[in-house]
Length: 98
Image 1 (cartoon, rainbow, N blue to C red):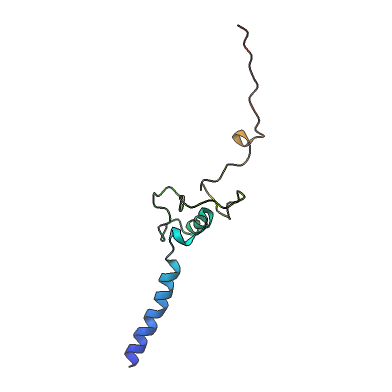
Image 2: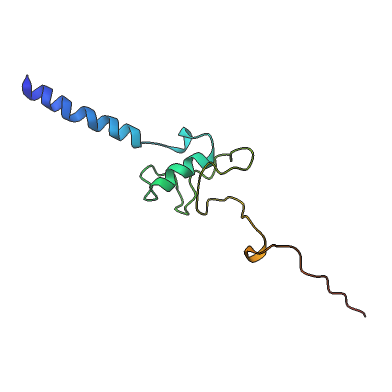
C-alpha cells in the first residue's frame, strides 16, 4: 500500500505541470496573447509558431484597437515613428521643365 501511495504522489505533480504547459493556438482569442506566451519561451514548447518565423498563431485575429497586448519583437505589429526613426514626412517634389 505504501508503494502505491508513493507512486501516486510522484505522478500527480507531473500531470499538473504537463497540463499547464500544453497550450495550443485554439486556447487564445487574439494573436497578441499567443505571442506573449511565445515570447516568454522562444524555444516554443507549445508549438505556437508552426513555420518558425517568430510569430505565434498567425491565423488568429489581432486585438481590436491596435494594441499589441504586451508582445514584443517582430510580431507583425505596425512600426512606430517616421522614416529612419526621424520625424518622417515626404520627400520634396522635384518639378522638371520639359
